[in-house]
Image (cartoon, rainbow, N blue to C red):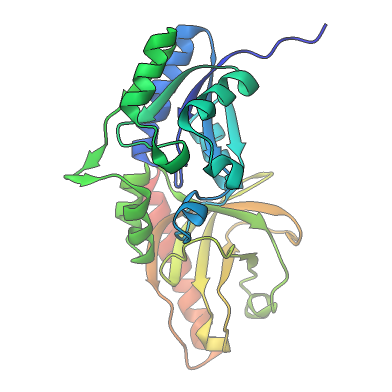
Length: 301
């Protein structure tokens, strides 16, 4: 006999970046789920609601895949429900949205932020959600806004920090390193000729581009975690024109083409610049290696 799926407590939000504010929401969800004998689930959308609601899409911090990874692996959510945000979803009244989650996914309670809006025209509010749950005897929690140094924690603020290359502040507001994962693609093999072979990722077009420059990163591969020096930008020394993400994965030997990796960004080392020669570029990359190793060592617990 097929085992019946457990009921869930739903944390409602888009969760771009999965930051410190979201962490408070997810913690409340896990606590309610444990008290209710349910699973903790994050309910998010495959595309940003602003695309249809406002006709414009903000540059996102994470891909759908990376958002789901953060929710599951970094924030210990039992389930992630990723819904399409299409015209049908846009026009769904708030009550029908909640009833859909109850009927189709087994929602037994809800958690949201105090400023959360949902349903057609954003008619659903945290107060309405609390009343809905109280009338039905369902679990519910409304989590207040989180601030750091008097600044509201938000995905919008974190996007600005990434664009400014302020990784130290971004780490504080995220509560974890900024991550980017993808499949390694072929580059021009310039790194190999310089003796610093790089793994190349494409920056998905929907993502905000962090400040162009060189970063100290950790690279997660199937066989472990490695320090890395990552250049994000257009490679002006070799007349590049497209944004690339090139990582020299330190202490690693092997072919990574076609394989999956995840980069964790920990520190901004320097802006991208054009060098007079490839030899000058190589000398600077070796200096970047020393600095990256030191940065990552200083951050180690």
